[in-house]
Length: 457
Ligand SMILES: Cc1cc2nc3c(=O)[nH]c(=O)nc-3n(C[C@H](O)[C@H](O)[C@H](O)COP(=O)(O)OP(=O)(O)OC[C@H]3O[C@@H](n4cnc5c(N)ncnc54)[C@H](O)[C@@H]3O)c2cc1C
Figure 1 (cartoon, rainbow, N blue to C red):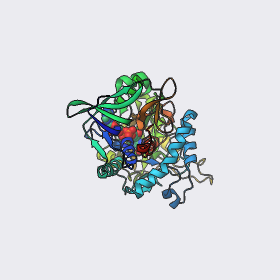
Figure 2 (figure 1 turned 180 degrees about the vertical axis):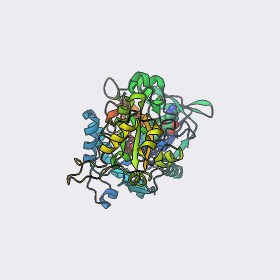
Figure 3 (figure 1 turned 180 degrees about the horizontal axis):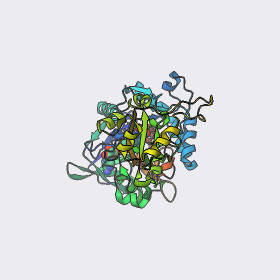
Figure 4 (figure 1 turned 90 degrees about the horizontal axis):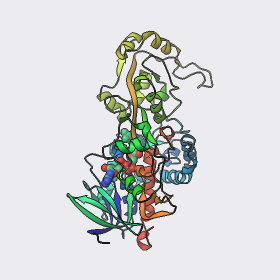
């Protein structure tokens, strides 16, 4: 093969998956790793994310007295995704999660903590880890990029999109990139696709993920499905292509979100008719998005009180929402009804009947009372943040061929690989996105490290 230059490992995409792959592979000093990134200026979804890392069985949990394990984590995810086919991969990812969460904290100095105040639907114990100070995904990316910059055998090549794969006799032998405006052929023993999904590709969304069409898109512009497209052209198998990470608490017009902990603290949701239409605590925010999408005018009002407000403000999401003027403070039912053009009678009836913690939820039968004025409230709508389907991979991240076996030399992870969230938006559990990104990065990078002394693949 004629190449302009050669590396050992070429990673396409510099988000969580790509950076983690590079860092783990580069522990092998014999490997030269290059990460090709389309545009750090446009950013990656990891940077946009809340940076909440789901992991079961970490020392952060143990120190907080939480008994958890990777197997329990996987079982919780499966109960929501209803996708038993994903189980082998899911178990590997859940086993990797406590190891990389501790590694990020202990080795890379990421200020990790367990989010005891981050209850999420379907998680049987507190399992989301986050940075102290809750700065979100931007801080996580900064930690990873700093470590990449310090590694002698990793080149991070910005503003250099991958534009296609180089193949010989069915084997991937490199990647074509556009570097400084010129198309260049990079030879590589392994190519890792870490370019995320197709949330910002309307044609692919219409073809594979029609439920997401028309929803507010809250991800980055660079998620155009490039890597998945190349894989399909090469004969790779794809799965769960209709799955996506949706959100039911997106602030219309701004794209920021209200804190998903609010329903668990006792917030109420009503439609434009002033009536409740959903069990607020009964589903994750992705499924809630589907429910709100079916409401008239595809929006609803989230209502909470001061007791919940302080706890909910401890997140970058709520700080952004406050800055965007996404919610207000109301002294009476009539003020609240007028602000959102809701029928006052219906709203008053719902407020009178709603219990912050229902009698059924508290076995002691204690009535925890009603929402108390002054109330906070804001419009919410449904959105799509990232797609969750993609290239089928095995437990080491190797891309599988439609006709069986794998495509030699090709790996995929994060949003480019088939995720662990089942076939639709309803199967996503909080933390699945970064679990598939950092988890596959960890697994693929570890697999490639040491491969300098044995044939790759
Ligand atoms: C608003 C929001 C909040 C979220 N919150 C959470 C959360 O708290 N917890 C959680 O687990 N998940 C969350 N997610 C999902 C999570 O962010 C993603 O699943 C995860 O970041 C995907 O990681 P990745 O490495 O696959 O992709 P990314 O982080 O998006 O990185 C992909 C990179 O590839 C680059 N790229 C694309 N095409 C090319 C190309 N052709 N050549 C070179 N580079 C290319 C992009 O520029 C980008 O930098 C959230 C997502 C969004 C949008």
